[in-house]
Image (cartoon, rainbow, N blue to C red; front, top):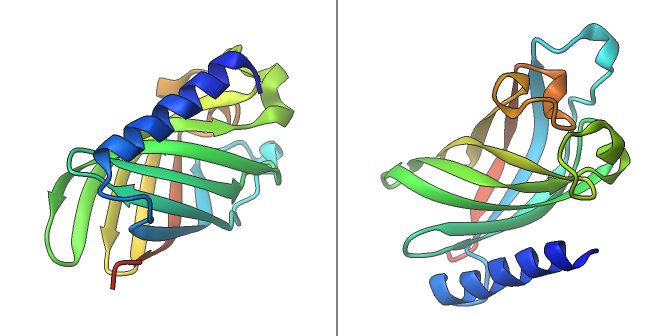
Length: 163
């Protein structure tokens, strides 16, 4: 890991400590599957993407860190920051922005950061289910993974750890 990646991770961890109420995660999320909208049949993308992520809920933003089996059948750690736009007792809508590590595809991306690619989109959860939608090649250019489809839809489960 180079100096820039280490600095980014340390900044995120420091910010998490300042914003979140404590160091214990508030939620666990388990991504399970994806749909690569309008992907080329020859891309052979994996649509079964198990993973686990821990979320620390803050007063202003939430921080999530996790690992998922990506669409290329590789393990991909990721970090995101999210902001709720609407929430009630059982459902929420948020946007998120972050980065994921795709080291095996670092030669195919236009982002020269050792396989770290930008990720972001909308997150909707209701009860234990969540759906995320991320723009693909249209807004992200040819980023590794995202250059393979017009959009990526993620389905998974989420559970509150506070109860």
